[in-house]
Length: 212
Image (tube, rainbow, N blue to C red):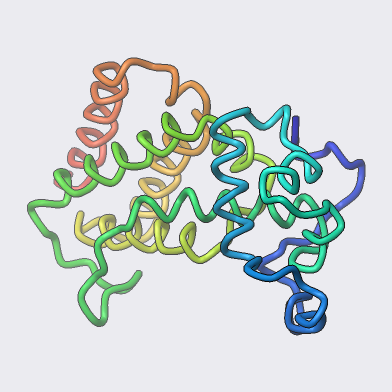
C-alpha cells in the first residue's frame, strides 16, 4: 500500500521532472507499440481490477507482455507511474472550461453556481467510487498534474461566481477542498444520499456567507 511516507524519503513529483522524459532519450530501445500513455492506461486498469496493495511493476509488465525493466524506459520510478495514473483518473472529471478572463480577481455573482458546484462535487465522488485507489494516492502525492490543476481551476471559477471575496472566498475554497479531498475514502463509502446532504449543508453555508 502506498502512503505518504512509505519510502522513508522525500520524493519529487513526475510533474516537476526537469529535462526530457526518459522515452525521448532511449526511444530506439523501446518495445514496439509501447508508450507512456499506453502504460498509464494499463496501470489504471490494473489498479481498478486488483487494487493498490497488489500493484507492482512486474504485474503491470506481465499484462502488457513486456519485461518490467522495459517500463523504466518511460518512467523513472513506480511512484511516477502511480502519479500518472492518478491524474489520468482525474481526467474523467472534464470540468467545463471557463470564459476568457476568469480567475481569482473575478467576483461577479452567478446564480447557477450551486448547481454547477454540486455537479463538480458529485463528479469527483464518482471518480472515487469508480477508482478506490484514487483517494489514498491523492493523500500520498502532490496531486499537481494537468487534470488535477484543471479541476482546481474549475473550483476556483465556481467560487468566483459566489461573489465572495478575500478571506471568505479563501475559506470557502478550503472548506470545499477539505470536504472532497480530506474525506477521501469516507466520501467513497458514504451512500450518495448522505454525500449529497452533506454537500447541500456546505453549499448553504457558502450561500449564507455570500449574502451576509
